[in-house]
Image (tube, rainbow, N blue to C red; front, side):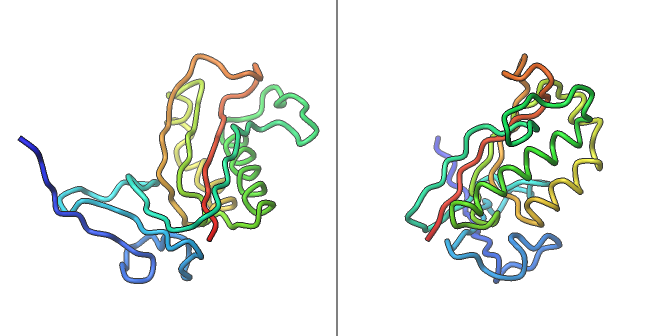
Amino acid sequence: MTHKAKSAIFCFESYHYPYHFGGSKMNNIGLKHILPADWPRAKGYSHCVLASGTKVISIAGQVASDIDGSAVSEGMSFADQWAKALGKVAILVREAGGEPTNITAMRIYVTDMAAYKAAGAELGPGWTAALGKHFPAITLVEVKSLVDPNAMVEIEAEALLA
């Protein structure tokens, strides 16, 4: 038996939700959030996004190291690592000619899911500083370790340009 759910396409401009995806302006890739009608809205990410751009930006995993490649500072908090890694993703998207609202998907690797959950509200300011109120499709995975032994967070992303 195949489940065929009716889907609703929520667009930045036409769907008024407490979270204004991507800010008040439609971005230049026609990004739409897809949500089956019988699904509740995800908190802090989108289950599915549809974009219509023609150039793909692939961003390798970013950790909270300095741009010179030095190691992540020992003792740096989870929230600070989160904010710095997200900030580097946003910088790379802008350098490639886009804006954070062009990000369609992110994969976030953490070395301690309990630390991620404990950080809770401390993660919000870092998210807002880097991505505003934009919530792409996200996968969050706990891994045993990252290349940098002090890193607790690594974020990779895809973005689409018109």
